[in-house]
Amino acid sequence: QVHVVESGGGLVQVGESLRLSCTVSGTIFSINTMGWYRQAPGKQRELVARITGGGSVDYADSVKGRFTISGDHAKNTIYLQMNGLKPEDTAVYYCYVYSGIYAGTPVDYWGQGTQVTVSS
Image (cartoon, rainbow, N blue to C red):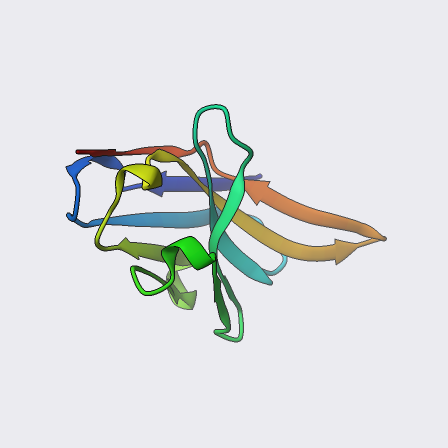
């Protein structure tokens, strides 16, 4: 069984910073990509940032220059450093793990989410 656990959310003021962490544990064959999605009330879940096993990163335009994703392979952990937070960053942030395609089926996992609230 695979467990995806996020931590680090909270309530901050505009312009402040937070760092989210996500750790994968359990029996997982491989990790292709890990990333962060977020979902604000009444909106669709959207990609925030992702990082591949080779270290390639990708960001949503809305967070470029403010957020940084990084990973620690040895710990099966990724981080999301969020600086210059804005009220529109308020959302539940979900960690996403894409393992790969097995027997023709994509295998992925999601965490339970961590709330980030930015107050003005």
